[in-house]
Length: 311
Image: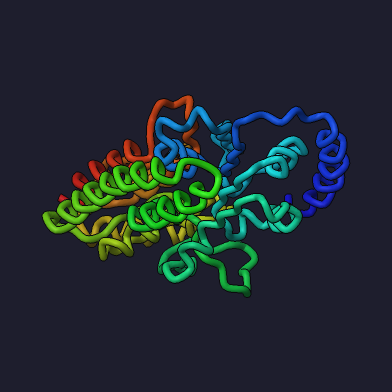
């Protein structure tokens, strides 16, 4: 996909030049974000002032961050923005040249830069099916939004940047109210882990929750890394995870949203009791505003799932 980006850039630069001559400027400031969690954070920070902004979610059709292919219009939308917020990382490498071309007046927030001291390298955990081609360079896990601590730090950085293009006092009040909710939910997660009799999660799927388990001192096993493109688990992985289910007396195996659950089903079939239930944790990679669910709603769902798995 990345080989196609130069083609998109060539087209978009031409169209951008044309559109710049024909665009009628509006009063509203344009904020463009890549994924749903960021969109929801911005809406909460903007609060009652959101009508003063045109807030665009690029991946608004439930596109997977790892497979998103930008259109020429997407690139134009970014170039016309007053503020652009994205995750960073390997899946966002297509943005590097675009961000470099943005004018100095555009506020740009790369959340992996904001969270640089908290970034974690992707792990090839025992039992995982690895990529066919091992990558030599260090890669950091991109799923930063699945940590409530990361969410809080991200929201504070976004609010600070938004103050440059809007009502600073409103944003300060809104981000304080919102991060208080994140703190309260964080406490609920901590209580769930403290009360639990188990300390391990097993995923028959990709594992995008590295930051979450790190926050709460949990262990995990999974079929694939969080950003893996693999879809077929090896026999060794199936056998290993089924053995862990038996060894740890696990009553639940986890998948993420968008999974067909076939790998999890196969793992359960290879356990001794063959009666573990499959539960889904929300990674928010397929959520859109049309789903009428918020970031906090999704994280509350995950907390309830943890209660079951760790009890």
